[in-house]
Length: 361
Image (tube, rainbow, N blue to C red; front, side, top):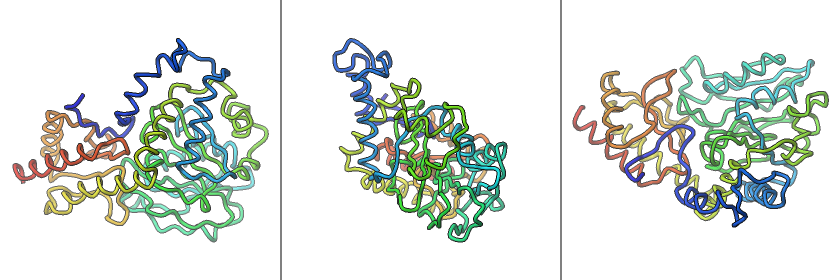
């Protein structure tokens, strides 16, 4: 719908070109008479979709050969527990850096499985910044370190990931994967639900260093074992075929747009438009995140009072803006600036924010 400006935090927009291509081919794939969701996942026709999507991810993210790519299910939330089940032994502790609600949830699930410790946290500052974090001198009994790269609720993001030592580093990149380059030399595992930048809900991307995979727990049920899924090339059980197909189309689209570097450039350009409005509003709009920790994906802000916030959101909805309300746990407003949000939509939102301030400031 041309009169809708979708800023939903997730599931979020899918590129219009991807939806057009899916409409034309997804429901009668390659004139086979079958929709992608109807084909056997053991068939050569589906395997072409499956492995092409993996190859495209490897190409656009420049994933080294020493990593495996997995397509799993259960969302990023299942990974909170699955990581601990695979890598947290009785003799060790899992280290967590707390930067928002999702890192808290990851810590909670791991704590139900084994011993955990908090390496750094910005909770005492209402998660307004990314805390100073040193990963180079951690105790030897640290099983792994877990970070959340972007914080959708509070609007903060790691601009650079910290250097690491020998301790494995695992990063939840659900809300900024495919929007930035990844320094693989400092990372052992990345995971992400696809429904923000990598397609539709249903598939979870896991990219894991093979040496980390070799250290995984051998006593788990196969369905919870990374080794099992890697050995079977993510075909141990029926994969979310339709979601993987859409991820393949999204990676094609990113390549056509100029790759990850162009996605990063566009993210910076779009986010700066909204931050400029906030910074030049004489505190009519007040950003939650400290400037050095601001997210390019989720821009969170408040208005002078809740009455004005309700008016802002009501008028925005009347103008066709979707998803601008802040998370229910914190309130306020939020602009989610994922890859598929067109620059033109951000310009319209910028103009609406300026006009609303003129009328109500």
